[in-house]
Amino acid sequence: MKSSSIIRIPRQWKSQHSDALSADQNTRIGQQITCCNLHEKPGAGMRLVSREDDAIAIRLQLIDQADRSLDMQYYKWLDDNGGSLILSHVIAAADRGVRVRLLIDDIHFDSDVNAQALDAHPNIEIRLFNPFESRRMTPLTRPLEWLRNDRVNHRMHNKLIVADNLVALCGGRNISDSYFGLSERITFRDLDLVVIGEVIQEMSDAFDSFWNSRWAVPVSLLVKVSLPERQRQRFQAMLRRFKRSRQYGKGAKLQELANHQISNFTENLIWAPAHIIYDKPSKVRNSQGKKPSRVHQFNLLLDALEQVNQSIHVITPYLIPTPGMLALLATYKLKGVKVSILTNSLASNDVVMAHGGYAHYRKQLLQCGVKLYELSPSARFNPPSIAPYSLHAKTLVLDGKAVFIGTHNADPRSIHLNTEMGILVDSIALSVQVLQVFDEHTTQGNSWRVFIRFGAIFWRRQHKGRTQLKRHEPETHWRRRWLAKMCGWLPIHKQL
Image 1 (cartoon, rainbow, N blue to C red):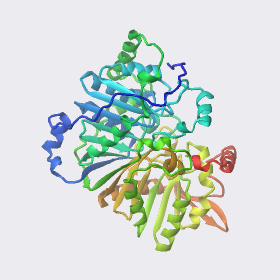
Image 2: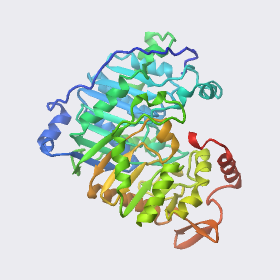
Image 3: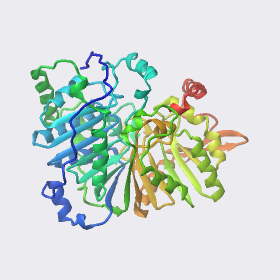
Image 4: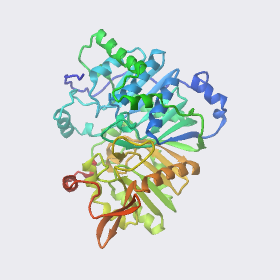
């Protein structure tokens, strides 16, 4: 159901201040950490999550084991089968007394009434970040507001779960079928990190800074539709039955994911120094073209990029270089740094407009000495997908000894418009794991290698024992190629 009300957003939003609950070692999560003596180890313990089935399983595991609090922050949380499955476990946690704070960006949000029903639960509070004035999601209302109001052009792109202030999950995945291998249209390849240790309080502080900002508006202040108590209870009961009955829309596939088990999050951890990096929520008030309001932690990432001496591997779904990026690549070329980049092909890119902006710089990237790979939608990974693949991970490996995993795309929107977050880890062991993911995506015909010959761009891959060579965007129809080219002519690169 969707609310049809249209309200005027007040200039000063007022909501009740709240902070993360203190960590309690007597909780189930706390006892697991204590029994393994993990609290005595320095730095952060981390575990890489790359498979789609593992990604949904670890989320359900953290939610089911939480005893005191769940703080969840997402750019997109859809009410499809995967989103509803996770939400049903969130309600179960709230039913047993867990305090749930759910912060969602308003850009894809169109379930005000359902959110109001959830928000009515005594242990659940939902806030929307930088909300639109119109509460009606139509092809005209929000696009028109986007054009006339620069504020709504700034979005919260963060993704984070913190359970009991003891364990966290961060990375690039949103909450929807496409990120868990449930969609028949597209499957996003992404990376998450399970994190415990000293940095958890920093991650909770990052969440609190957004939760208590003037841009995080309680659903109760936005929704002006009167919702009968019976309807609220009916919606909550529906999700409870969804969890118990296992009668899901995707049948056996969702049943399999719901029952999929992974080893405990305290196992197979990599321990290393780590730094949490995130934008201030006030970044949304900057006008286009002004210097982004970034906290000092982002200087750690910039310094690390400038200190690269041997190699850098980049995984980014959207690649639209800024002048600063191109200058850094020129510096790398002079220093002899080997640069390898994996991004989406036109066939795998879910945003044709973004690919049009990227294609404009492709030859320039190659001339800078970049090894450029574009993911094939027909790639093969384990577990196999029921839909074409698209790249969604945002990751850096620096000199094979440091890793950045987060939400930051290599494009102007991430730098200037959206808020982003991530974790920078000094670890050779984690670097090896991420490089294995990079190799898995760029070999065995899973990606196209882009190169220049005789001044023209070609695509090549080894597939099923044969060399395939293309002179145009591979695995695409001419209509899609022309649409991308026309998008590349538009003067909107700073918005991509």
